[in-house]
Image 1 (tube, helix red, strand yellow):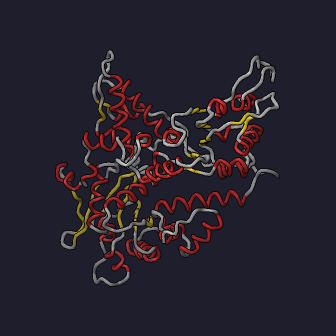
Image 2 (cartoon, rainbow, N blue to C red; image 1 turned 30 degrees about the horizontal axis):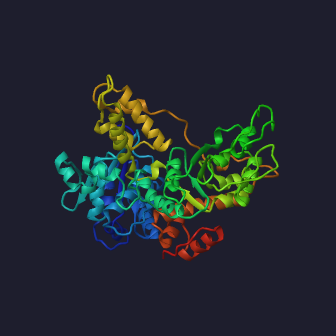
Image 3 (tube, rainbow, N blue to C red; image 1 turned 135 degrees about the horizontal axis):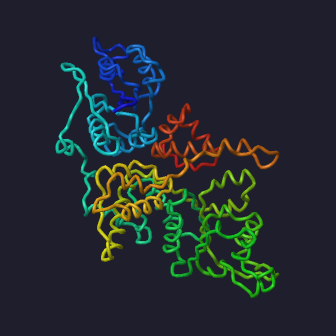
Length: 510
């Protein structure tokens, strides 16, 4: 393979001991590999030791083998235990995915020798599945060797949870046994989605507004339906409204109704969506797109529980629960004056933050199998319909896609692949052709216009802090000491002070 060669490895105890002079005549497995093969373009190291100790190791390694510092990357990995297979797999997969691996032009070499046996097993698993790589090991008597496995031997190393079977997929698709059927339909096996489902179940029991945040295609309407169906309003109307599809000059009429003659074209009285949803739930999707004057009226409804149709002076009592959703950054919109702060606080009583598909470990494969089965079932019996399955390389290709359109993109990609592929197998060319090419995402944090009004640098910086604190706490599974380390803070007390200042809930995990 042409391009760059990357050596990827944990930094083990022997490597540290060698750098710190505790081993005579032994440089450790990583240095031994680099001394025997000078052609690695990058050394990509993971450590679960103290950051300063591993930085010292990298400095020593660079001098020993004559590498420039910029050719060595070091990443801190927080693990509950160095023999926790699930955690090792999840953290390493997340790290390599963040590095945009695998990708064309990079040949990966996983070093099996440093680290625990559990870490070595996970390298084998990843090399045979999501991150194709060559495997090497270092021994005292034979030096550096490439490790080759026959398929059946490699499979013997795969943990049982990675083995797919029809029965297992059906069990996963049915959802956890303790989930009510309304939430069991939200397919998942990732911890990140499970946490949001648990929060949604709790908030459903309370008569409070709910704000669901998440990228397009993450399942916001599914959550809204489930919250309504498990609340005391189940069986009453559930009215979904796409605020982004309503013309700005008609938003007030659509939501609150109007009287005959209120404006040109108002030929008769019309009930608004609030009246239609009376006693039930009104789902306001893409609420961030509402005009400011409509936001003022909506705030009044939430405060007074009554609506006044356009062209009328008489208020009408309404008993409606609001579930709102948006893909926008409402905090940034509030700071920029595009969304009312008082309305934001009224809506954000119960907040859900749905993770994008690229952050939902293991869910992609589950969804691929579920939707492919569903598409095959829907096509059964139709002329020219053929039951399709994914080839191994097509499956691996789709598993490694970042899915910027999330679940919606995944479903329609599979549907196109089924339609366009010939025969019973969807191969990698079919899968690649079925993906829509979309422009890359950009972070608009550096693109916001400067003006005398509507720009607040302190608010923007606080948003950045909240984002990375939440990310670190998630990666550290709520442990503040580990999260503080990921953020480069001096202690968990410092992190706690930041969280208090920024209004982030502290469950006192440490």
